[in-house]
Length: 299
Image (cartoon, rainbow, N blue to C red):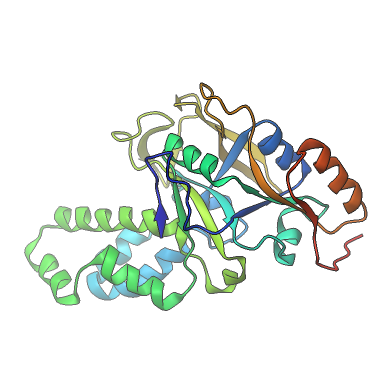
């Protein structure tokens, strides 16, 4: 289910309240300074994040195209693709989220929907609900991405030259990349995740932040010095690697909304949760702020 709204008047009425988990630093960066960080899809907590859909596709396309697909797909898994995501969830007080995103304390909070819809439209994002059901995933691969029968694939192999087959496989690969951010392993289903997605398809469509998408060896090369409509490629230190991300202004710099609007805040379990709640009430007067109901102690 995609919500790529072109009109700020679309307030995402059919979407449930969606929450983002973060520590105090991230919370202040978003709510206090109005900056949203979208991480590259290859650097998420799920280690199989981007490759998962290609493993599913292999099960189908290896049978359809045989050695053509096997040779083509060998170079697919090492690519750093220009797809950036921001995670949201229907679960506002989930133990696995507290442990994963703010083990030393933090907040989950929901954006006001009208303001969120404006941000999506202004930045050319899509809001997508993640799919965890494997049968549904395979159905989408067969009927909405591949859209070919085994006999049709065999006819392509018999009648087309090698370059034509390659271009067909490249077309399929591009469509698979497009769906990759919303396919996750079924073991993550309890997260009930939604995602804001920014997908730079190629340089002819989005000529700013990604340089030509020229394949050099086994990776795409990012141009960190170019920007598109304020979208700047940045890097931060992760636990074991550097992580590329986009930092996007949530508010319209020329608009009349001076601050990020928050619908609700949940304070994580912690030894100072009541103090954390009081500080948050000072920062966001009038916003409903609640303590987590989870009896979890990590101190």
